[in-house]
Image (cartoon, rainbow, N blue to C red; front, top):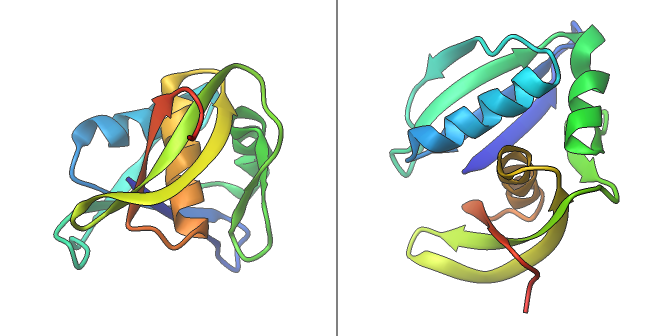
Length: 139
């Protein structure tokens, strides 16, 4: 999954998610639910790789709730910066159009849904096609 985030002039955070797997959308919706944010989305056109695309919107007064769940901060340009978290260790592995890539970043998350979202945000920061978290650490 890949997640692109940006703030709009109203202060809302647009969360655009691209994936081939409905389960990854469910992970994002679970993370939003943990933050107490209603997971309403708009279907977007498929991306260049034909991944299903959805836009979720986080109200400006709830962005800090999502940051608390994800254990990180959204900068003014929308980029997510993770901070030291609590929970399980995951290796966020790069996904390319052809399969696994060489990139890998360690992250910590309280559950698999939060790990999936953090990894998808890391993928965007690193300009990867996508990211998949696996329990453990990077080699």
